[in-house]
Image (tube, rainbow, N blue to C red):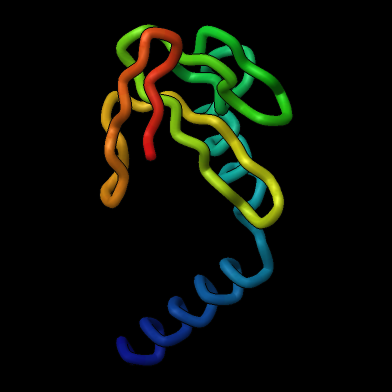
Length: 96
C-alpha cells in the first residue's frame, strides 16, 4: 500500500516536471536574480553596450572577453579566470 502511494507520488511529480507546470515561478526567479544595473551583463562596467556587454571597466577591474560562437561579450572581473593572466595598463586592465 505504502509503496503504491510512493510510486504514484513520484509519477505525478515527474509528470509535473515534464509538463512545465512550474514554468511561471522559475521564470520569475530567473528574472529577479538577473535584474541588477541597466543591463544584466553590465556589472562593474564604466561603459556598457546592450549587445556587447562591458566596453570599459572601473579602474581596479579586469576586462575579460567571453566568446560565444561568433560573438564576444565583455565582463568586468576582480581576477582573471583560470588559465588567463591579468595585464595592467594605464588605459585598461585586460585578461590575456
